[in-house]
Image 1: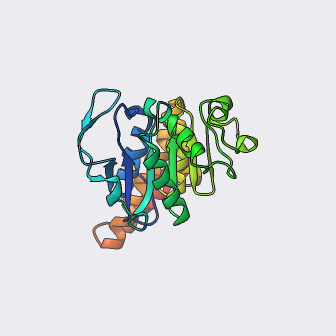
Image 2: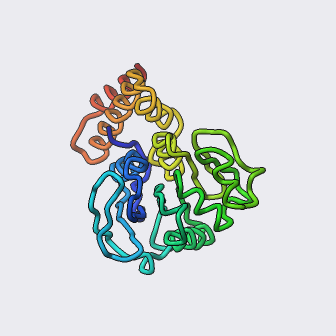
Image 3: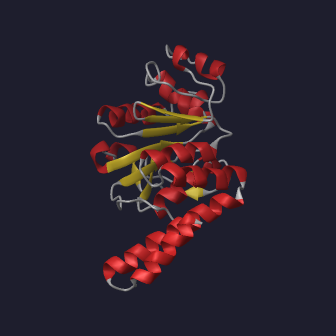
Length: 234
């Protein structure tokens, strides 16, 4: 199922990779950002290969010190035990601050939310995580802004707990305009609830978009566009 983004995005999304990162937490997000037109590249502390918690060996496309916020559409930070066992991943949290200060969004899930909390990025934004006392243990000052929700977007930062990869993706896809409104809701219902009616909504929208594109390029007919519109109406 492809996206129905009104404008083809061009800036790159950067997904951070590090030892034992939780590869399942960002799969929906990166897959549908890529299908929506965003190039997705990986960034590590260095360019040395890392291995995810699922055993996937990844060679980062670039090192963290090569990453510039002005070149990016988004920075994605997945969970890892390393967020809670030392300062090894703190440079990613500092890079997240650079992104936010430059007006470029950051999306953090699971343990990465604790990294942002330690960096002070959640002190004045609504946010969520696995549970409130997990973040409270970081000593941050943002407890009053904690929200019991599947995922939260505020002030250019998306947060979610480890059991909500689909909600996390929903927030990111909406933030970058890959899906909006009814289509964003349908995408979420399809992948979170396995709702067959949601697939029908997305398929109809895709058919209409393809028919419109054919008319614009002169490869289709008005009848095809009308058929797409009728499918969307159904």
